Amino acid sequence: MTDLDLLATFLEIYRSGSLTAAASRRGLTQPAVSGQLARLESSVGEPLFVRGGRGVTPTPRADDLARRVGPHLDQLRSALDPNPALAGVVRIGGAAEFMTARGLPALTPLTQRGVRFEVTLGLAADLLTALRDARLDLVLSSVRPGVGFTATPFADEEFLLVGAPVLARTISPAVLADDPVRALEHLPLVAYSAELPIVRRYWRSEFGRRPPNPVGVLVPDLRAVLAAVVAGAGVSALPRYLAEPALAAGSVELLHHPEAPPLNTLYLVTRGPLSPAADATVTHLRSRDWGAL
Image (spheres, rainbow, N blue to C red):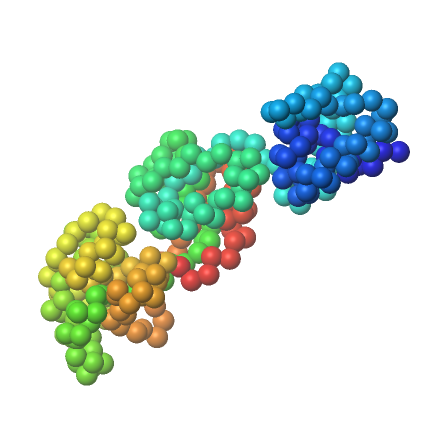
């Protein structure tokens, strides 16, 4: 009886047209692949490939063998593989900052299983409207949607109040401990929009009131907010996953140390039945250990 490993190697050579490519896919050396092919050719009693300068060409006997064993080997792989291949397109939406820093890297294992992603970046309200209109399959939302959607919490963003070292040195530690709003009120704010959504949430959560600070920069991208903060244009509240590299580099400092940093829950939002690929995406993202965001 022919060894299944020999047939698996044969099929990789047949499908790739190259012993080198087959060796890479099988995790073997090229001499090992050549040896397995020689054993299989000895077993069937005739050559299976014609060697050439640009790879190998299958013989009629190889065509017949691939046609006979290919489907069965593929089914066997699927039965034994805990992460079977998937097919299909998933239309997914999320905030540009989160998708760039965390979302897209987290989807890589699914692309390796055959899922293709079409990504839309934007604000939560716009993305949820697109989901409602069936223009998206899944939204990673920083806002809990209303009725008509299925929303599952999957991670929490942790917000940090940061500023450049030159601005941090203007804060009196004594006043900060006694009256943080007064200690910070001279610092200009860098914010995402005129409503100061993240900064206002931080002040209300930690200090019980809106920030009285002047606004120095408004820019609708948290990565640009961070760049302005690093440059010394003002201070801001940012998700840990964006601020942490700058903190590690010393280009910004923590301006306030709350007992429990303010959090914002992120949701996996769907609507209606899901395709197998979309369902696998939801399961993958829910099971992931996101750590501190």
